[in-house]
Each structure stands twice: as C-alpha cells, then as structure tokens.
Image (cartoon, rainbow, N blue to C red; front, side):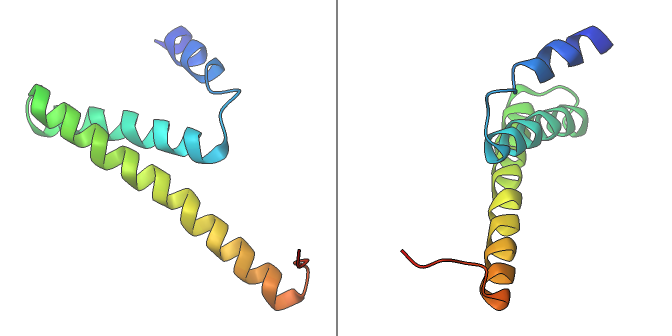
Length: 79
C-alpha cells in the first residue's frame, strides 16, 4: 500500500499546485463516494468529480487571498 502511494505521488512531480489539489480531491472524493454508496460505480465517479472540483477551487481561493494580500501591501507590480 505504501509503495503504491509513493509511486502515485511521484507522478505528481511535474504538476502545478492546482493540478495536484484537483487530483488529490478527486482521489479522496472517489474513495468517499465508494464508501458512502457501498462501492457503486456511480457513487465513486460522482465522488471523484465533486472532490476534484473542490480540490481545484481550494487552490483558486488560496491564489485570490495571496493576490489580495499583495495588493494591500503594494507588492504587486503593474504591467
């Protein structure tokens, strides 16, 4: 099990932070969906989709907060 996790994480090395969050969210959502629906394929896929969207949006919120903080402190440069 641990080996599978390490191999899976190695595949994420070239991914952006947002892509990593999306993949992790989809994985967690898929497992949760499978558990909640007793292994139903529809529940698993539905959970993966919802988890992926949540993972994607978590990063978006972090970026918005970071940009807002930069604007407050005058660290952002105009193009």
